[in-house]
Length: 117
Ligand SMILES: [Zn+2]
Image (cartoon, rainbow, N blue to C red; front, side):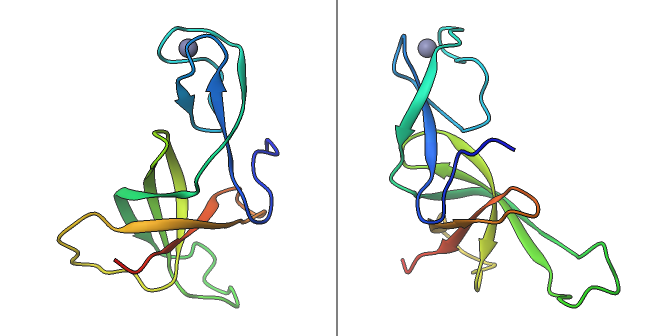
């Protein structure tokens, strides 16, 4: 797993050729095809594009709460697969606003929390 995030901040990638911003796992710029991607600071806030609730695979697990996985569109542009923490408004009319919280090491998904609207 790439060390793209630390405890309280998340780092995305910026193309060195055309300055397009990309998600941390990106290997090549989708805009110009360049591989010269450098780290860029990210605001850590965004909106949920799509989400689903995943039931735990391990029936005997101590923590049997289901997990919400979502695609978050960062305000900076890139889309990230993320885990959503906390209560989730299931019948939200508008896009759900989220903010980066931390990286979960066991599965590598960054964790976002739902913001007050
Ligand atoms: Zn580029």
